[in-house]
Image 1: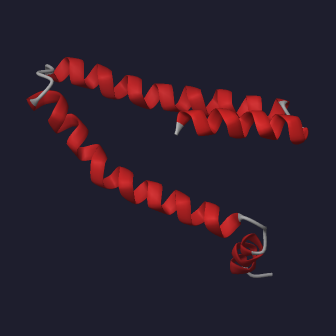
Image 2: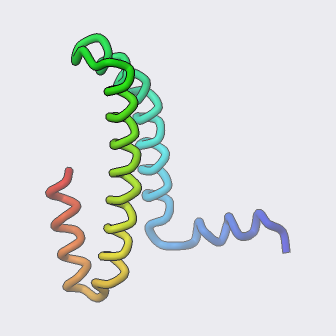
Image 3: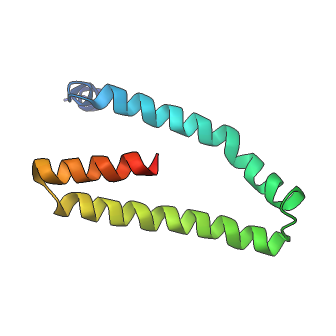
Amino acid sequence: MLKTSRFFDLLRIPGFKPLAAATLMLGVAMSFTAPYLSLFGVERAAMTPFKLGVFMTLIATSGVLASTLAGRWSDASGGAGGRRARLSVSMRGA
């Protein structure tokens, strides 16, 4: 069996294509905006290089922590009621 067949199997999963497109768009948007975050921090917010480093480290760490907690919560709350709660929380974050 070819390894590409696994990729094509993913395309058959309902909802995978829109999720993949949204993930791609998010990655492109982050690649445009993330470099300016450090420039903004130094020039406009008057951060020292040390403060900027701490700030950027906290951003990355909080992202990993939030993803881990959201994944555990998502795994623990199954069923339709849990799905509605997750959707409600994610819509509030947007």
